[in-house]
Length: 332
Image (cartoon, rainbow, N blue to C red):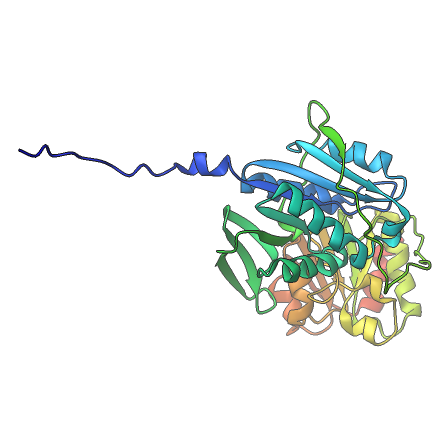
């Protein structure tokens, strides 16, 4: 006689699976303060589930590591200090992140979708032999992400089957995480000789301005080809100073030499989402719209009533900017 036995396969719940997740956020900073994008990246990391660790690498980064430890959701901060990390060279930070990954086995590695993150994370993904998931705007689960394609004209949902997910985060789509009730533990990152033998940081020249940075500003006044010259941007600078705003530009204005490229907003420039975006003399090319259409309120001033910018604007004024902007300046 045989006894009939029954068995069942127990599948781990989604909550149980999330306990095994762990994320490393590579902090962006200037050795004095954290770049706001790091707080946005931590928010995305929290959505992935599991523990969140922040890696801070640089020279004399005590204040930065302390600030990172106070971010809500961060369990641990790893600190690496040394001359090798001067200038945040990707050639030095990449082996550091790889050594950290080798030791601690994170399931996700995250950074902001800035010039910093775009320089480092693709290198890390290549070394790990995985496909990076870039510029995400949403997290559906630990392995499924949402991002834009075709200059923001389509939304794509991506499911990654790689053992390690390497992700860059569009900061404008994730609210920055707040302050934690208590600070996270601060520990030393894995030690090693990570200095690059092929690249050396020499110096950098930073533009100094009393205006807020483009990525952090609540109000942005932006000019395009319609400004006709760099001298005419003085109207926008005056207006921005009265409003406490930042000044941006379209690629057309940058390519024409009106303003430096650090003011460029768009697919190949900075991605912004301020409370108020004022587009002056900007026609609204797809490349530019991809960088600013998530702004809370968009105001467009253009003499061409058929300009594409009016299709995304909340308020539009068909007028000559050289008459309107001086009038606005006078009344502010």
